[in-house]
Image (tube, rainbow, N blue to C red; front, side):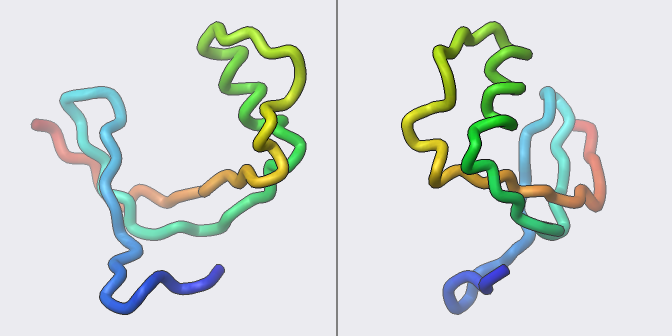
Length: 73
């Protein structure tokens, strides 16, 4: 994994079903999804019908992140 720009903080936040906020500690790995398989699984889960992989599949990746804490709001 390549580092971000100078001053980049690899930690981030994600809304994971309000009112919880997940503090993301770091990206553990970046997986290739150039087949569009993971995108297809998500599309099926959320009721989106596809006629094959998305056009931009060759550029797709999956970020695997490690949450370090969850805060209730």
